Image (cartoon, rainbow, N blue to C red):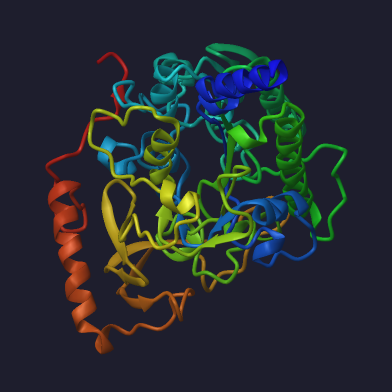
Length: 470
């Protein structure tokens, strides 16, 4: 009887006081890779190298096949993922450099801000690119720690086409410059190790890590442990080292016993910079690349793993974007949604495997300052008339030197059925005028809300970026 009573008491205590893992909101690790293309993984057709750790993420979790970067360029894309908004809503565009006097407005709420309010330890490692002045750095945007570079790794004196335009590239710890022109061959290793150390230090409390790898953005660098390892030259070596990084993160999460309480998300900021030839990635057959609103510029791979929550081997073919990560993370962690209007939607049902849900029914492709260049609605994509970049018709560069591109090509636009034509080659506008009419209604609403430089709309609900000396 005494044994029965004791066991019963333990059972009651267990019911009344769930385990720490059950009580504690999940850890979030978000890996944002720079310029990795849709076709740069073994599971999406890469040749000449293998990505076993990326591939294992699909085996153990989910792959989002219809997933878009917020925009097809560095700073804008990162503004979108951090705030859950279209970047043009908050005045962010292009790729900020050392001359920029703006940055992400500290009044905007980032993923780190909402999680810090929830009691998370927060850290950013790698590339920031949302303003290099102290008032715009991660430590002013909800992050407890930052170790990394303030903008792209090519913004240094050895830029391939603008030599000596950029100053020495700083490595920053929190808000202090600790090194100039650091050894870029160690970037992937160092930023991975910083992430592992942060996990170890905060293993008993919820944490958020934003690991923004500078690679495979040119110039390409790789450590000795992966130099010459691939059959695709330096680019393949770099992807293999990034794959190693994913393996290190997953190994540490497992060692700490956190697999059932950690969501790992891996994606890219935009498509490949394909005029760099053998130093650029693959779109997997999608049209154009970085700097364009065609599929090759914005459709990127996205993988998620969370043991016991994300179903194993799940392929999600529903429309999704990195602007959806903030509201999804808020939902999964119990954090508060931002006070200001955002554009992201909650994907948590899809993350958990409920494919009957369709959280996002359309997506807006803005580029340049505030140009609405295309709209996707379901499986349809309407490309609006616009001038933009094209890589087609030019020979790509080689070994770190870029080939030519045409930046002012006029695209007449067209309607594409992405189920049958993900390469956007066959304009079916004449066959489906009713679809175009429906998408143009979305365009009209977007222009009223966010504006559109192409049609002269200013937009009623845009916000200002952060400016120095406000």
